[in-house]
Image (cartoon, rainbow, N blue to C red):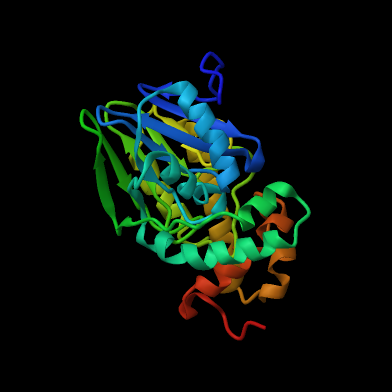
Length: 288
C-alpha cells in the first residue's frame, strides 16, 4: 500500500498536465486530466516499472485512467500498458498504426535480449506481457476527455516510422515523445528515418508557439528555442548525408569524412539509414 500522504513524482507543467521522470531510461510519463478521468501518455518499460508509476499516479489523483497513448513503439514507452490495464480495466490504448504494427516484433527482440541480462530490471522486460495498442490512426485523431480534447498528430517519420505528438486543448503544452530529446543527443536507431526527421520536426514546430512547453520522451521539458535548435542539428545530419552520397563518398568512409553536429560514434545508424533512404538519383554511383 502506498502512503497517500507521500508526495507524487508528477510535476504539473501546464493546466492539469503532469509529467513524471523516471531514472531507468530517464523516461517521461505524462498525465492529462479531463472531466472523464486521466489520459496517460507512455507507460514505461515493464510491468514492474509501470507499477512504480501507478504508485505515483495514485498519490497524484484518485481519478481513474480512462485512456492510454503510446508515443511510439520502443519498449521503454509501451511495456507498462498491461499493468495499467490490470489496474484500471480494458482502457483503450492509442498509437500510430505503424507503431502498433511494429510492436510485436520490437518487443520480442527486446525480450530476447533481456533474457540474457543479469540486471533484474531488464529481466522484468522479458517477463512483461505485451499489450499492443487497440486504437490506431494514420494522420490525426483526437481523444475527448469530456471538457477538453487531446489531439494526436503523426508529423511524419523520424525517430521511428510511427511517432506521434499530443497537443492538449486549453494548455500550451506539446507531448513530443522521442522526436525531441533533452536527456542526451537525439537517438537514431535501426528503425529511424534520418532524412525525414527534420521535416517532421518542422510540423511539430508549427504546432507550437513561443510559450509552448514541449515535453520530450526523455529529460526535462523544453521550450520552442530548444526544439528549433535541435531541429537544425538534425537537419545538418540529413544534409551532410545527402551531400556525401551526392559526392560519391562511400558509406564506409562517410562517418570519417563528414562534419557532424554530434559525435560520429552516435551516428552509425543515422548515416547507414540515410544512405539507404536516399533515392538513387541523389547518389553518385557506384557507391562501394
